[in-house]
View (tube, rainbow, N blue to C red):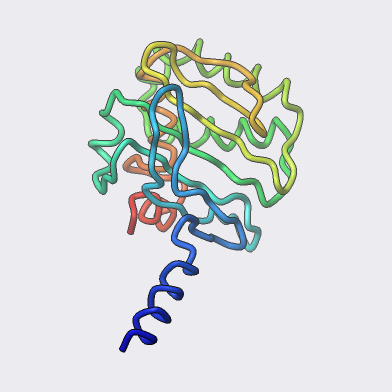
Length: 187
């Protein structure tokens, strides 16, 4: 009995529960954004045609399955994109911009125009992303959305509305990919 208990304990201790793996990308189960320790809510793979583009991961203060609640929330959060396919800054920006446009009316887009131009400038400075790169979109309520590439901040775009527009890319009524939305929501 005692020997069986030791074997079970050893197996449980050796089992790695600290990382989710999606398409070969190991994702940490926590992330630090500002002063907030966030937990992995869910992650999935973005594909286009037969290409694996990136693994998208959503980190929140606590698990949440409601897209509407996540989009409306004013707390720190992170969307991490683990790049699997080389993309130019133009393709990256166009993909973001098209997904934002799909989830907003022309009037709503007009109010986001300055922030979208700022995002274009940030992506233009990045030039390209390659497999293995990680883009982070960290929302800090006091300052806005900080865009980072491989741990280096590339710029911050002010405004909660802009961050909501970004979240709608994956969690909106017209997400970039339905199964990715489901996975990021923990499903």
